[in-house]
Length: 338
Image 1 (cartoon, one colour):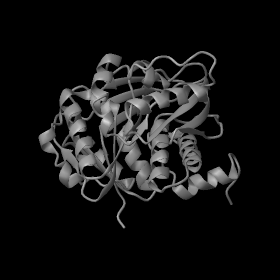
Image 2: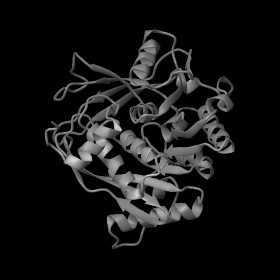
Image 3: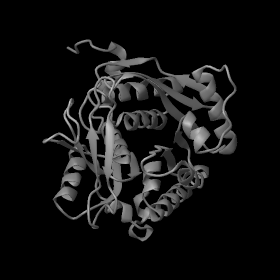
Image 4: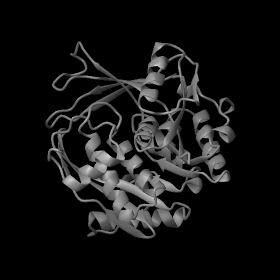
């Protein structure tokens, strides 16, 4: 049986400095393609799904490069439109030690940011689909895209397609007020939501949790409040990340379902090769567990392991299969797989 997944978003050209180089001083940059929803499509393709990425790229060699990248990762490009002036770009100054990574966007007037609702037929796009995923980054890019995303989740619900939304708030793209106003209309149509404490407080206006609660208790408080506001949301997820340095982090995954919070074990990730896309790998792992009807504890264990593995490879994309992630969970870290 076909297992069709649809994601909608912008894919960009990422240009990264080598570790130890500042963007202002470097003469060479490494090139990758990536973007939140595209990364989720790639992960789910590696998990065995028919992943379709909906977007718009310029009809030039960079647009061709995007198409080749997606196809090489097993993602269907049936709904990848061609047109517009340019591919969005971002520069990543790689962090090291106490100096964190820094992103500089160059994405205004990109082909995708100028996409309009009339260019997409969601009736056709969602035919036989199991799940639709979009994120707050898409909403941030233009007013027409906010309309596109809203009509997409409404159409998905109408057709019985599960919906997934990742808040993915980026302060460099818009204000908290703008984000709040754009995100709230979508939430009544969402089944699976990736959001954390800061989203609850600053984008949904939820009162701060009482003093003296543990991290898990605080998160449960916020998720209970979100559930009161949007009873349609079945699953909520997020990570706790402790940053010791740019190359050493501790990661714990959280999944809230049926009023209960499930947590993964701690993953001590050191050294980090590339942190970008770690959140998308986590979100994809959660979606996989839900789609496969795994118990919540297994789902959060799988999702957090997928994210930890993503930190060990260059580029935005998680390129590990379900079998490889499960072996990693069974074997623990660092053992040679013979």
